[in-house]
Amino acid sequence: MPKRARELGALEVKRLKGPGTFAVGGVAGLALQIGRFDSRSWVFRYRHNGRRREAGLGPYPDVPLARAREYAREARDQLRRGIDPIEERQAALRRLLTFGQAVEHYDAEKAVEFTSELHRRQWRASLERHAVPVIGDIAVSDITLQDVLLVLRPLWTTKTETASKLRQRIERVLDYSTVSGHRSGENPARWRGNLDMVLPAPTKLTGGRHYPALQLDDAPRWFEAVRARRGSSARALEFQALTAARSGAVRFATWDEFDLERRLWTIQPGREFSKIPPTGRPHRVPLTYFLIAFLAALPKEQNNPYVFWAPRGGQLSDAALAAVMRKMHVADMKSGAQGFPDARSGKPAVPHGLRSTFRTWVAERTQFDGDMAEIALAHKVGSRVQQAYDRSDQVEKRREMMEAWGRFLAETPKNTGIRK
View 1 (cartoon, rainbow, N blue to C red):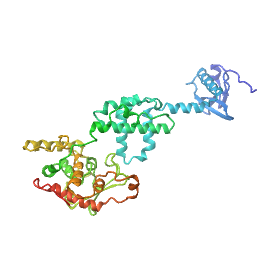
View 2 (cartoon, rainbow, N blue to C red):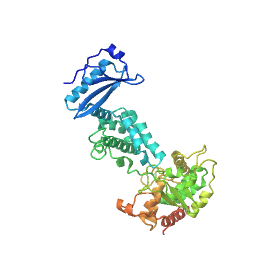
View 3 (tube, one colour):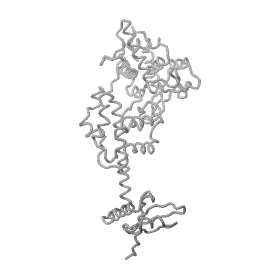
View 4 (tube, helix red, strand yellow):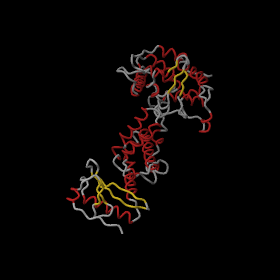
């Protein structure tokens, strides 16, 4: 039987001189470790499954002798129950990871997957704005369905698209926490068979994310009106209509994305704000001769890379384009016309709805291939297998389609039909 160390008192422990490791008695394996420069810390030595191990119990005198012995007794009790104190502590630390810390870890380890720094900032900002203030201090192992609902319910009916994206991001952080060993069990942010039982489907609240769109017969009249307006926002809307691009891609377009000789605009993955082309490849937009002339006529601001820039510099805001659309609607109504309402909802058309107008034109007024129109909109086409094998983006064929679309928009209001 090994010799038992004499039990030292608090004053004796204080007077110990180092460097070295000194057993203090009271609990087998408890010792004070003194470094060369008189740094002092507690260590608990033990054997588990034939292995010699040492567990740190904290610095001395921050952890006094009585507390160190208490920690050592707890460790001895764990050993009697067949538990390794070091492994148990590590598991406890994993269980105590908070949601806020999990967001930090996910951001640090998965940053390479974000398609742009802007996308990464937007992803994190939504969590920090809406989720972290509510559940940020809760251990990921303790987060329940009710906690997730506390985050989502205030947004679900009023800001449905924001809430839907937020739910997906919470789900990803919690999945990451599970795989990393910080939680177990079902993910409380999962939609199918979980949140869909207590929250209305997003498509029921948003009407399938239907954006008020220009009616086809109104499109040439609207295009004539937007070309008559002055300002960068009006030019951005004109360009968006002609290219059927998303507002974010237009507002953040920079001159280095354009190859005027090859007549191409190349949008990098992630630049369209979470609406990334299916393969993650850059999305190429063919430029017609009309668009080349349009771009050549645009004013440029020194040291400003943006094609469409705000009066104070930098990129235009989404609200700026929407404001122009609203003013055009009001002005048209004041002139005695009907404005530019959506056919279904009657609401004034919005910038994103221009893409729907383009898609309707392809389907109802032309013989252009529907898949080609979907590619022009940077939508997924076909199955995943088809996407993997079909590397062509039909850019030259799409150029012909976009030229026809431009001719349709530029027609006088009295003659709105066009067929290929």
